[in-house]
Image: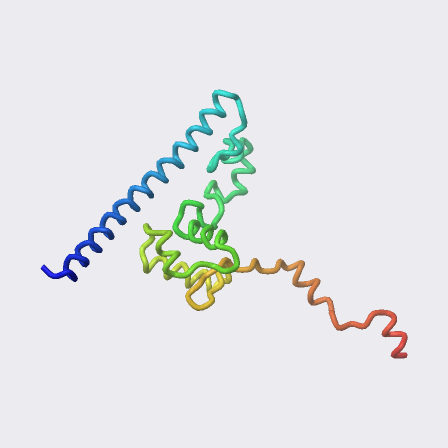
Amino acid sequence: MSEGDTLAKALADVRRRMADLQADYERLTAELTKLRVAEKSLAAIVEGASLDGIPGYAPAEAAFPADPQARAGRGGGRGSRGPRANSAKGRLKALLEGAGPQGLSHAEIARRLPDVAPNTLNTYLSVMANSGEAVRRGDFYSAGVPSQTDDEASEDEADPQAPDDGEADAAE
């Protein structure tokens, strides 16, 4: 057996062990997050504290308003048309917003969203880049800039080249 084969086997063994440990790490991190939420929830119940600080908690009154008129105004109970927080597109949007102005590479996004199929991820990134929800710079993506509202646009169009009173008097 040559020294090259021994080193190649050692490298393969190290990579396999590293992948196993990474999978265990991700599993333990998810479990730890669940336990933290459970601990906060139970502490809130036992100690009578507010549940506002718990991720994913929404008061029942906000989710199901008692007033039927308010429920009808929400589109028959369907909620908003935007992506849900736990959907692939919602998680992608949150990931890009958290990345800051430098953004994330396509490979890093795929690594952080392993449950999203590559073709789905490509489609979402393309649609988000075309709609302005994301900005693409080479292979990097960052959250898009919110578009102006109609009020802001009308103020910008209010003749920015118009001379002020002092210039008008000088021209006469």
